[in-house]
Length: 484
Image 1 (spheres, rainbow, N blue to C red):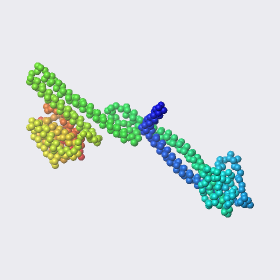
Image 2: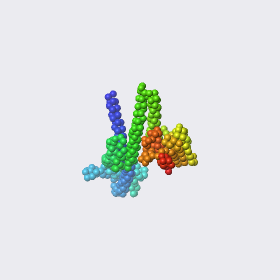
Image 3: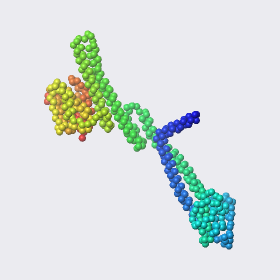
Image 4: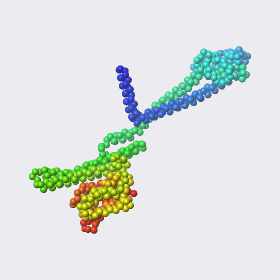
């Protein structure tokens, strides 16, 4: 049981180490390069073994043939077929060189198989064969090893010459050469691994510096990453991170601006609601004052509700605009055809009370069917149309006009309004800006919402103010035009 637990612990440790190593890019590169070098080395050794076997076989076959031809030229003279001699023992010459006495043996036979000459013990064991000339693989008498034997006839045909070489000798020679090559390749692989480790470690330094810089950053830090020294493969990652920092910084600024603007704009109506609530709750308050306080509470609540709705719409539009600019997908927002002629009619119906209350003269014209965005966001297109119409009706002079005109590339809304000073004119369209003396309810967000809704449809939004015929009259124009 203890052995099994120990084996499981060792196996778990090995798997954890393998996961840790394979999780490192440096380790992966080293393992891949080492495995590739090993495979290529083995392939090279295999190819060398085949080539070496072919070349050594050709060389030794040539040596055997040359030796056999020399023996074939031997003339036994008067000894004739009875000549038989054993060569002297060569062991005493071993100190003068390196050789294998059993590597090559020979024997000379008469035509009837009588041994005439041999090199000694191995030569005498060659089994006579009179079946023609050439190379044959055979075994010697009382010997289990395989030999490669060459048989040829002498020039006069009276003798048979056999030159034999042990096949194991050739194999040992090839293995010895390959063994030395394998040792060289192993040393090369170790040197390659060490070199790769140094090169990869240095190549990974920019990633380490990038990691350190990222870990030291604070939220909202938009400073671009230092791209100097980064490899070309890492530069796109740094560029995308810089783009992400810019987007996230802009998003955080929008959120902070949204919270700050909402707090600032809601503070006054909420304070008014608290005050009017106290007045209405005072037992000593007159009935008429209580009714006025309750009406003020309803008005203030309506104003707060409208402000919150506009703030949420503006925040949503800002987010949509950033997604459109970055080509990000917008989830939960349907796309389709936006026909502004229908959207404007719908917006006029919603502003019917203001039109009737101020006795406004509304004119509309739609050239060639007016502006149509085939691949747009119908919900946001209606926000654009509604805010332009609502702004014109709300801030138009009583008895004035509202003119709406549209062609296939633009939408323009004009209304009669009072004149503004130069300082107020320069700030028209700013968020939460309301000119001094403005009596109409509002939060100063209508034009900002319209501008944001136009931006997500790739439209340029412009406002203009021109003096009218009367001393205190002007014409306000807001237009949205598709970008060319």
